Amino acid sequence: MCGIVGYIGSKSVIPILINGLSKLEYRGYDSAGVAVYKGGEIETYKAQGKLQKLKDLLGTNGNGDNANKIGIGHIRWATHGAPTEINAHPHVSCCKKIAIVHNGIIENFKELKEELTKKGHVFVSQTDTETIAHLIEENLKTHPDIFDAVRHSLKKLEGAYAIGVVYKDNPDILIAARKNAPLIVGIGENENYIGSDVPAILEYTKNVIYLDDSEIAEIKADDVKIYDFDGNVIKKKIECVPWEPVALSKMGYKHFMLKEIHEQPDVIRQTLSERLISSDLPLQLNEVKLTKESLKKLNRIQIIACGTSLHAAMAGKYLIEEFIGIPVDIEASSEYIYKRTISSANSLVIGVSQSGETADTITAIRQAKAEGAHALVITNRVDSTMAREADSLLPINAGIEVSVAATKSYTAQLIAFYLLAIYLAEIKEALPAKDIIKFKEQLFKLPQQVEIILGNKTEIKRCARKFHNAKDFIFIARGINFPAALEGALKLKEISYINATGYPAGELKHGPIAMLEDTIPVLAILMPGLVYEKVLSNSEEAKARDAKMIALTSSNDKHLESVFDFIIKIPDIDEIFSPILTTIPLQLLAYYIAEFLGKDVDQPRNLAKSVTVE
Ligand code: AGP
Image 1 (cartoon, rainbow, N blue to C red):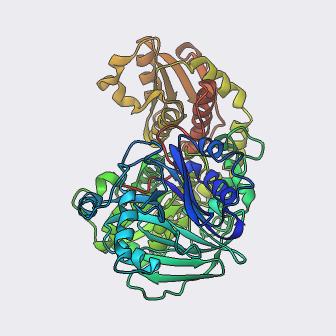
Image 2 (image 1 turned 135 degrees about the vertical axis):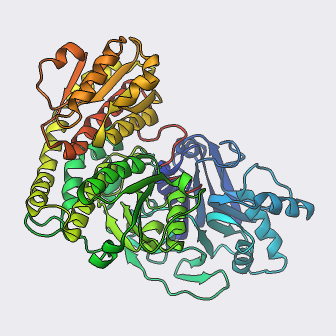
């Protein structure tokens, strides 16, 4: 998934583009480039590697450069073609008059490329994107107006794209369009912007137009018009984004990830606020449009997600089944979309996505809705494609999450599932009122319990230092904490690159135990409750195979010292609420291990914050 920026106005354009790209680095960072109108020409500058390489190429951040009026920029997460300079965007047409930046995948680019090559177009890169530049150039022959040439070109494209286009012979118009990939237009004073996401332009304006699929924008310095691909004008609302630029600063933390881990007590409060008014009042989930009648007819609940959001979904399954007794299916979005979709008007499909732009999850929800399902979306971005297409919405209100590794958004997704499970139990009267009150009282306590854990970082850091050279790492748990084990493994894997795996503790003896030896740490989530003794005996089985044992527990059982090499203590809590607490130390453990290994914590290799391509 890539990042796009664009500007049209009277200022020096390169610093604006570079600044915008720096706010989108979380979307991908294997190469970057800009195309600017300079001295009557479209000049393109590209560099392989992180954004700093492009800044070095442009001189001191390109300041003072006399390129002004108009420009586009791109930061890449390679899909087609290796992350080299030649494959970096922007891409240009043969005549070098047209430059384009693109986020997404053109599914039919090979056929188009063959057609255009036969017509004499010369390609220099291996990307799908370059095809669009040559297609526009070809269409200019029959549609001399650049806007029309772009519009007609888009009709030939299949797949997903958000694009920005500049044209040497008409530097007073910036063209942008989207289909199945996010793109916004920022509205300034006699200047306008485009961006893949709000952070790219937040410093300059909070007034944005969210383009929807199959919309194209003709953007001048003092005017913006939106059309559909048939050229019909579309009236769009200018919305004011609810964030301040300060959300994009590290606020003194070394990494965004550490900042976002520490935001979690407040994030839990924000996710609960205006919904959990008091323990003896019904929950207020005003954007969840599920009635008593529709719930009575409900015969299937499916939760669909990817990555960390899939782990939140797994915890959600446990809670909903526990609280209302309706069976819940979990499916990775990428698997869901390639099997028969079994949904109906009596199905509830829950899409979980921090970004609300994950292509696989968008496609899966669309497939379920096409079969009549009610789509409820749990997301951090109410401005996202998924949110705008949902029948019901449960915003998690975690604030912009910049670090590629999801932390505060995961905790907020868990809270959202506690709220949803209790809400469904209230509507269906599936639990005794006194239990519901007790659960709500637990929710109120969570922020300060998380603060206690954050206050105990030294122990977790000591554990990280002790085990940071491990080559393999195993996490085990049972019940509602099994998703926490999977999430702890994913966190460690994705930022330290250590081979970390989560298993149901009971599964260890069915194969994985063969791997154990004294170089492998096994972290057991051991919370007092239904499965405590079972996890303890699984831990003793691992200990007997010389594994290095770590316990994450609230127990004060002295016996644990004879089993575990390291014990991470957390506050006591009802087992069913413990995933909120167990996940925090695992986030910190992954963070400190990655730190000790000198990894790029906020921008791990090969990753992107939101995978907007299937
Ligand atoms: C989590 O740390 C990863 N960044 C990744 O697994 C992420 O959770 C996944 O790509 C889903 O993203 P989404 O929540 O925005 O849909």
